[in-house]
Image (cartoon, rainbow, N blue to C red; front, top):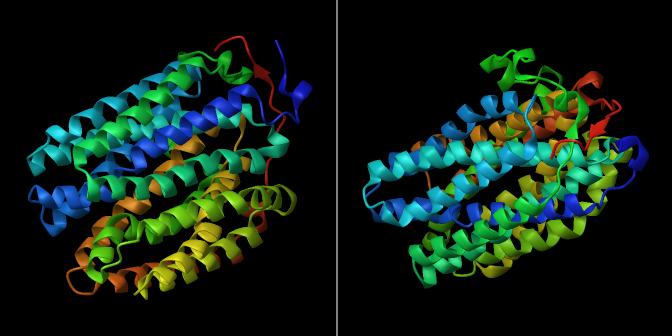
Length: 406
């Protein structure tokens, strides 16, 4: 048995690298569907409200399942839960082309949300189990980069396949990426915190509320909700906006995002570990605010590129930083719950944003939606500026990890 204290500075272990790439392929397989599902639902007869429900029902499913997964992660090994989540995502993806009725499509979105909530919670928890606690900002920053790149590269690939080939071809590519991820996950060797490995199910009391909210880190999760609410307009409306403005190169927004986010990630990860989250989050939110306004004013490829640069530097670092902030304030046995809360904040933010701005879209132009949503990043700045000292402090308890159960 090895203890994490013996190798406290080892970050780039084989297990961490394999899990990082598996998570990247899962996010790519999933995220390439996201910007194409609203127009696909429109093609099979969805109304404006139903297009909003495409995102909202998915978010509801993810939020419902996460407290139960957080509860299981307090006493269960990581690997079986990870495999179940990935296979579930694969199955629901394969079924999408067979949905020609909007009612069935919306049911599939709810089920997809359940699978996504399961998978993201266990993957994120497995990652933080591997990362040395003293390097949690840097480690989860790199892991978060797999999320960010997946969220940024995959939509541009999805848009290209959807516009130049077909929705079925898009699903085939998504399926292949998810199969690769499952292959990596089956080979990765994971660690389980000793306090979890030695705990029995009977010793853990389940409460939906206590498994939904981790009190020690609720504040950064709330800030995450506000940030993703502002981001939700891009997820739902960017293709529709590009068609209105005849912006044929909108995929560059995602591509530039990925490049810039990758470049700045090592810098921002170390910034978090050395100085904490406050100044970093304020900076990232300000850059994202500028990016949304540049996007709303876009009439040419140049605007798209400039917006992508600011968005990659801002939002591309903001979400990993918020996750590191959440986890830095949480004890090891509760990190499954904290991860679930973090991802639920993301899904709630994006899901409710799609619904709210879907209704608002009836009364304003699409560009105005980006401008309105940008002010949620001003709110993120204010929430961070006026956060209490206690909310900003990191907890760094010693973690003893058992390799006895994998």
